Amino acid sequence: MEAVKRFFSSPRFAVAGASNDPAKFGYKILAWYHQHSLPVTPLNPRAAQITLPSRAYDTVSSPSKLASPTQTSLSVVTPPPVTLQVLQEAHSVGIPAVWLQPGTFDDRVLEYARGHFSAVIAGDGGAGSEGWCVLVDGEEGLEAAGVQWTSQRL
Image (cartoon, rainbow, N blue to C red):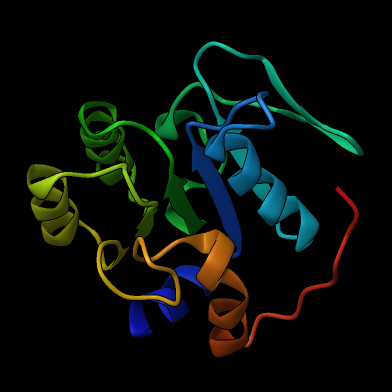
């Protein structure tokens, strides 16, 4: 839980793999940050915006395009080969913490993440059956970090 507290202590968040498709986890994860009134930036190199029912978010193409990467925790919702590339760039711009959603990593990705970030949430643990997931474990993490949030409609 210490890594989760550190993750949520960042003043900003980003979602790599954000999607306009409501059926995809990249959409659901972005929507979770929005619903919790957290400052979030979607990362998607192919879409200029991600549109939720109540708000459209401008995207950035990669971690290096974030306004304040050293103050941004990154949720990752990409396939393992893409995740490794995202993490390498995220590390190069000083992102301090990453949350690798279930299905986004393999052993190589985990090894890289654990060697290059101060806080890594991934793998076994959390309340869900598939491991740590912000959709399942995020609210408890916010509470543990002392983050005040208000619920916002999607």
